[in-house]
Amino acid sequence: MSLAPPFTLETAHKKVKIAQDLWNTKDPVTVANKGYTPDSIWRNRDIFLTGTSAIITFLTAKWERELDYRLRKELFAFTDNKIAVQFWYEYRTKEGQWWRCYGLEDWTFAEDGKMRKRQMSGNDVKISEEERWFRDGVDVNTVEISEKHW
Image 1: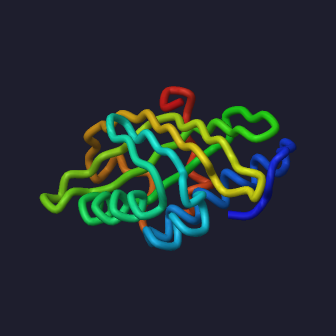
Image 2: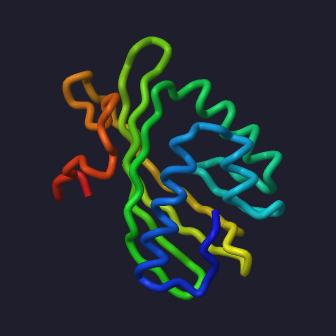
């Protein structure tokens, strides 16, 4: 993930979309090595991690469990080296149940533009096949997300 702090409105927006696209690869090694410092600190709900090795292990397990994962992130706020995002992602379980996760993340960046700290809070909601937003072939950036889902 390039684009180093201090962020402007333009570079903060770009940084968020770079992160979104990186996560949508569902490649744990690429995500960890391109996006995060070797000593990156994470809180993902109730899980606490440190370092790219732990991030790779976490993401590998996540995407083995969360099938057909598709994510959208939007800039919420930013300062010189911090960005807050709102996100939505959908996935299905092996049993065929679809879920949507809504949440917020706050990120702190090192001077090289890699993320030094990531904190995520999210809530999963069961959805039906008909309620899905991020279907195959849909650009996640064009899906209208109403105020009801903010």
